[in-house]
Image 1 (tube, rainbow, N blue to C red):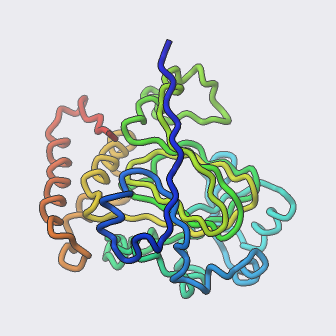
Image 2: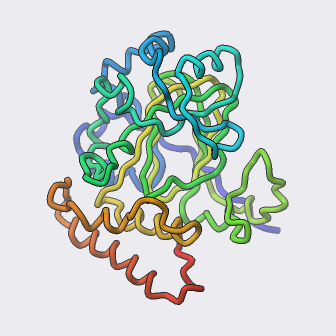
Image 3: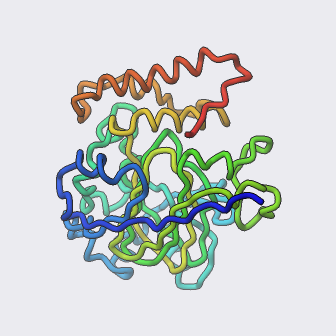
Length: 308
């Protein structure tokens, strides 16, 4: 009989535990998911917003939304429609990556200090849109298992609502992913028997509510269930702290679906002088770029990348 996977509770910290000490955060906590409370202290203009205030603030704005059943077909939808759906309990749309720059929240929200060492911010590659995004979900919305693109580290901070997250370290991905169909297990559509290794996967699990910020490292697969209508701000990070892990994750993505519309290696190689840097930034970045060169040198049939 296969050995069942272990379940781990996501630990909880308070932003005041480390303040502006980004190095401490990455050294001590950024190798697994973590919930951070008090992260909105630097954005009181956002922390004080309740559901009616957010609805009023976004009145008339268009938000990029995905079909909630498939999360594949996207279109712009009026925020008023989304909030009306919330009130009616209709699960037609799920907003997960509409850039905050296109909303009035951009002037009010400032990422907490420990998330600001971010190469997406101020890059000439049009990546500011990844730094922070609006997230709006009706009750019972579900995001199936996936890995965020471009080797991103990720985070989500809720202003209201409640969500359950289950997260899987990169080395667990072969247990959740079918190489033949090139897709992850979908809890609402797939019979577990089609993924016989699924029960062996270790995972980290938590619920987040208003004021909670969940952080997860590069390459971690995750799925999300929304228990109550929810609104929050999420974001993505690439930096030298996890540039090698990010590159491994992007290589796995590349090996499954091609390079996409974003040249990750060019992004790493360009603009280094303007980025926040740690003392060993150059060596880490060079090692990450070498990973890609080594992968390209493999025979085509062997380029399976690797998330772990």
